[in-house]
Length: 326
Ligand SMILES: [Zn+2]
Ligand SMILES: [Zn+2]
Image (cartoon, rainbow, N blue to C red; front, top):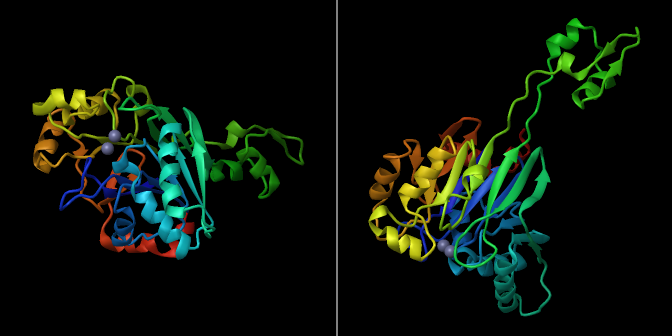
């Protein structure tokens, strides 16, 4: 289960309603900021989620509308926030631009917050809490653009009733079975893990793609995702412009969602030239379960289900004690 807060959903330049690209992905007690456009730190405050535990930033690419907010964020962290190290994950080109930006912000001075730039390649980039983040290549303008697949591990539930019936005592034997080991009980009987474990239950899969110019290379990575977040800068009436600038139309994004059999589609990075309705109408004609989130909208992504999170629930998530929940 993941929660996603859309912090900025405008392309290239902000509009009155929409800020520049950023989204916060929450998984248990971990928080990941995906992109950090200008104005992100104020959006984090407005969202009620704040800066707490915000020590990991994933960059889809190095365009300024996705990274400029890092300057302000690091400046704030270096003075007021108790974050020891901010890890910024990105491709080589994106990180070079961030390094230039940090040179201006930090001016080589000693600050409390260390910035660690972590260069990523295709493959797993972070693991923990029964969840893996895998980076995959995305075609846009410039080298080293990546999308991110957040995926909980598949697990097999422990069938306590079955264990009880088989007379397996509470204790280390049960733990060994859960870990996949065969055990021999005191009375000599041999119990295999499959005797007490249920059918595998797949974890939740959330795929986040930043700016993208084509979708044919994204079908497999997005396959069967519970939610796909992807740009839809243009609509089909400006199809040629979309192709020229390495962006997608709402219809292309929706066709990807349909072909990859995703459960829910979120369209972000909208150009100011369209109404939300126009983008939504075009995408829904192809893929019904499409949403065009507004800034600060928040959703819970579960296996096969997406729910909007209301203000009350958001406040609960902002509480420190909520961070340790299972
Ligand atoms: Zn962009
Ligand atoms: Zn871009």
